[in-house]
Amino acid sequence: MQAKMLATLFYQVCLIPIAVYEKGVCVFTENRNSASLIISGDDPLSELEADTSVLNVLQLLSSVWNEHFIFLNAGRDIWFMAGPFSIGAMDATLIKSTKKRLYPIKRSTELSKYLESLTVISEERGYYIGQLMKKLFAQEAFEKHAESNDDAMLLQARQKKNYSIHV
Image (cartoon, rainbow, N blue to C red; front, top):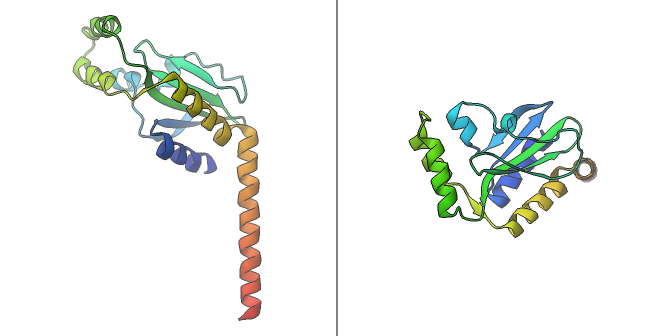
């Protein structure tokens, strides 16, 4: 539950789609689409080369369609993947080669519109998006969020107790 709330917060702040995986299965997404979902209905993670064994290390992943994703294994069998987005605008050569690959695809018009609508970010913004992911989702951050939630609940309980004594 905490992972989903933090993923929603991440999306609201960064406006970058995000997915939450538990034990390798996508359990929550916030405003996500991808070329693989359009073409075959497959989860984008299945076509990317994420190293799921590495804990708390950001991985920048790219698809053949020039989509970029940031992957983080946060431990406790929970993974986060932000994206897709494009890093920098596509140049004419990349657009031309991408369009050549679209011709044999059934849903090429939909895919073309999707690729043109990808959020474009700078490398610098990508760096800071990754850093925010680590702060929100890495195992240590998760434990810290849980502790602060426990502290807040304890404080709330104490306040209610004090309030009921004075009434």
